[in-house]
Amino acid sequence: MAAKFDRVAADIRQRITSNDLKPGDRLPPETTLMEEYGVALGTIRRAMALLEAEQHIVRVHGRGTFVQQRRTRVERSNDRYQWEKDRVALPDEERAAEGASERDTGLPADSFDFKPRYERTEADADLATAFGVAEGTPLLRRTFRTRVKEETAPFQVTISHLRADHIEKNPDLFDEAKGWWAGGTQHQLSTVGIEVARIEDRVLARPATSDEAAEFDITPGSPVVADRKTSISNDGEVVEVADNVWPADRIALTFTTNLEANRTGDDG
Image (cartoon, rainbow, N blue to C red):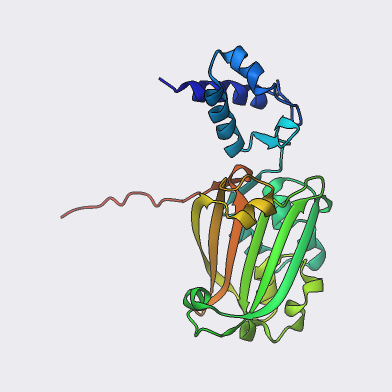
């Protein structure tokens, strides 16, 4: 049998998802909820803590508890990378008509506030291992924050690293002012003759750090989804290492694997 606080949380959650309680609505005080559900104060507080961790509610000191404003959800599938690669050869105007964020959210391009930040850096031990290079190898670090204009916090933060020696033939790739680039990293790399042949993703769920909680406007310790994306060229070299982070309630990952037919034949 579910614990009392689980039953309370489930009922309030259902009222939120059914739109009986709307985004921005204030929940009744704890004493009122105690009477409504016939439970102790500790039970209500455990239910509220669970709903807050799930990002259904937000508690504002001195004001009360409110239903969380709905925030854009990203639907990301593993055919995304082939879609990006197919766009490398498209004319600039056609490639610019739709980017990955538009594809993942279903929103038009003018919905987003996209902020890039570029800086030259050197490979630390982690990145040196990831790239298969010596520590201190020059890199370009690119930080991308993507936010829907009507929302207060980004739905995704990406920290991407490229090897400086791979991209030095095209100075535009070092230019922060040109951080928005139709076609994304695969097209950028194609301008210096690099074709991405394979991409590996390592995805894990973990609690948000304090910096991530502030960045995403979530409660410290709330779950986030972190993805280390490694892009590998036709020559077998690692050409990009990108760390993507999303609040867990804002990302859905879909993986489709095509399977070969069973092999049948004569055993004799």
